[in-house]
Image (cartoon, rainbow over all chains, first blue to last red; front, side, top):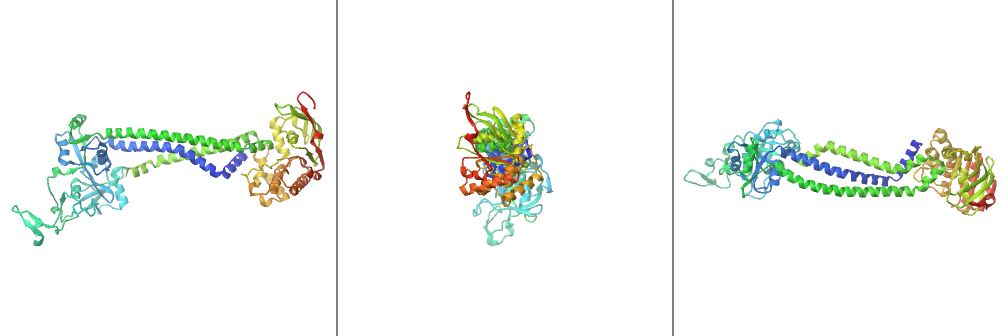
Length: 394
Length: 225
């Protein structure tokens, strides 16, 4: 066979019919890539979500959707879930069976969730600092790697929280937080969050505030003074929206901090016995709060996801079968239209192997090209998975 | 070219034809005329070695085709016999140049070298299609396509050119021009030309013409006609 000559003829034919060729390659490639992409994406999402859930033994929170509680405490989404009080969370560690890490994931700053927590959180998630250090005092915050990168902020800069409702005078007010550190990137929700002390998040919530010293305010700002010495001030008094060394002493909480809210608490039992005992506390008929194993919640979630994935894969398989059938039909029709061409080549004296090569070249080229494109896209998907997974997880 | 005592039947068919004798000289132009369905194309395909007779002898350029196997006949045909088909059968996905050089692309019996390319250029110049070499057949007129087909038939420097009603779809004036071009080019290259046609108006351009019914005997299996 004259391979070079036959190859030249085959390529000329495909070039002449490039529209059809490109369409066939695209259809076959897509029908091969889509099932892989769906399965790969689900697998990655599962790995990503499970790894965080697996590393979190128990999550405590208000009664309600288990999934929303897990997503709030682990991925900092669903900020509108019901709250538990700080004292309710503390009871879990009171008997020395566990350690708790508070989570108050209700507010945001410039589109990123502000997480009120304790310094234990950084140890628990094994988070390290790429610059600066942890928050030290009220009003300080630490940025996740992606937040710092996207906002172009670093230690020494400030970040203002986003008010709940701009025109709601009774709502929360923005707090200008001092940035003390930036976390090293870990490829997860921690990269996309702003961390502050729980008490700072309560300031954001309006449960604590700082203002001018009541005793030194102008007389016209005083509404009255009670017998116990407390002074009532009017709305003209200056309220601080930033915690500074000069005004930090003026910040105070109204009410009992034990009653202040948390959206969740990560519970770290000391051993499996403690875990079992703690779980037992929340198996009553009408518990006021819930204690969950995030892994179990994720198992339930992925049972559903996998069922949907299987259906999608089945549908994509049917589409791929249809595409393959159409491709075979196109090849068959194409060869049928070229019957006379092949016959004439044989009459000229062409080698039968050359004619056979030409007959199969179009189908072979299209199939091999589709497989090559599929392999390339699959490789790119796999290589870039960490990148787009971190984007996805944001 | 020489045929002697040729017998042929299409497989599964009763009727066939017998050619007692037919020969041509080098550089001779021969027209074989006959009505549609009388066996003109069959005779050409026998001479080309595409069809194999049940008996008899076919010699082209002193080579007995009947003694060759299929692979050898194919190699001999593409190197020594130029074919021109009724509708020229140019490939629309190739340029005019690639169409002329097509025999070199489809067999390992020929090598596409500079000499072949030079022959292609020289034939294109001789037939006035040099300026069309990069165009596709679909962009050419019927006359230009016919000249390309002639170039393709001659590019391997064949001893014998077989033309199967190449003027069938042309108007009378273009038929005359096409036949003259065929005969002139064949003579200049000292190639024997055998053309089959059903149109008597083109016969004057040939050295010799034969009516097919005078040349062959029609046979029925088991009986001589």
